[in-house]
Length: 474
Ligand SMILES: Nc1ncnc2c1ncn2[C@@H]1O[C@H](COP(=O)(O)OP(=O)(O)OP(=O)(O)O)[C@@H](O)[C@H]1O
Ligand SMILES: [Mg+2]
Image (cartoon, rainbow, N blue to C red):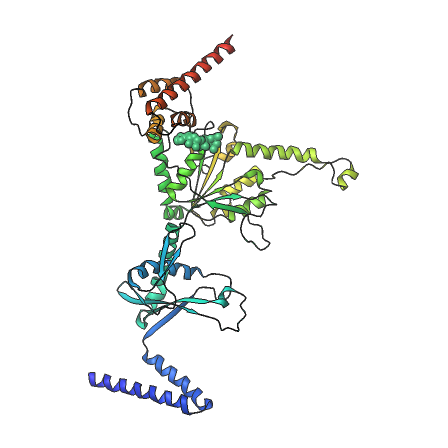
């Protein structure tokens, strides 16, 4: 057997030598057909497959390949452990230093998947000095290449590449900084280049410190909400099996300063979702509302704050339309007397937005409405199925106070707690007011002083209320 192998290799060696001689000493016309058969022969003996993954899509010089990006992230961990020549860069979002395989370093990184051994390397080709470049693809051609044995072709092309893409995407989700998006008015462009097309959303990094741990409210209710959110985020298959779009609606209601906006931030931090803060009054019409929704990504919370106020705009709008009908044809022609058009988003537009067909696109979205006046809302808007959970955030009870005292003063027990408990049962005070009184006003202010300030503030509020009642009664 070994004798046969030796003979085979010496035959291949002979062929190689003959080929080199041919190239050097014979004219092009003779070598071209020989080259063709030589390559065929080499392919026959070469038992490895090599796939390249270019940085830019083959049919669009400006479009980065998502597969390349996923592979890059996937390989970073492998490269950091195996490669000797690494390239460092700073991630724009997190400012963390990322180590990657240096392009064109002729290094290989090995991966093992289901017992299959694979080799990754990265490369870069540079354009010649005379090339005029129009797109990034022309300027530098970076790529990854994957080599594996021919017998694993199906496993690699099927499950391995899928695994790499999924892992890469997962790493991207973990690495990214979450964003807060706000919708632009019609005449605003939003930041960044957009080549004539108006960007619908402007974005900033979402960096709100609120968590459910620091949110002051009834402990049991809080746990129910956390469980509900986590259950939602893990129920992709369930939603699919029951044929429902993977989305959930929450209505948060309560007086100003009771933590509605804080809870939205805590939700986003818990689930690691982006937040789309939708200013309904800045949306021109139902069509724009639909476009805005289509432009949102999955794993996001779409928030419409003070929904009662936004819907009043709609009613006023209908009235405005009637009022705006200019009787004088001359004035109408010149556009005089025309009322300035506000939002034309209608209730039905909003309902379609929540549960119409296109709200199913992408999935994994939470929609949150907030209001100070739940009784003002149209029942159609908040019925179950649209707003799955109705959450009341209310005045500060003793449980909520204890969370705030722990947050702001690191206090779990104090002699004044008993007095505060009685006072809070008698008098309504928002968590925002309690928090404001608890917060030390000077650096290192005595904790007892902060608690005493709170006691005084509640007592004053109580007195005010009693005086108000007495005056009204007189
Ligand atoms: N339940 C709470 N837990 C912890 N902090 C709270 C809570 N409620 C209010 N606060 C504090 O008060 C501030 C105002 O609260 P927030 O903006 O969440 O109120 P809101 O209910 O959204 O009010 P509005 O109806 O006016 O929008 C927050 O910055 C937060 O520090
Ligand atoms: Mg708010």
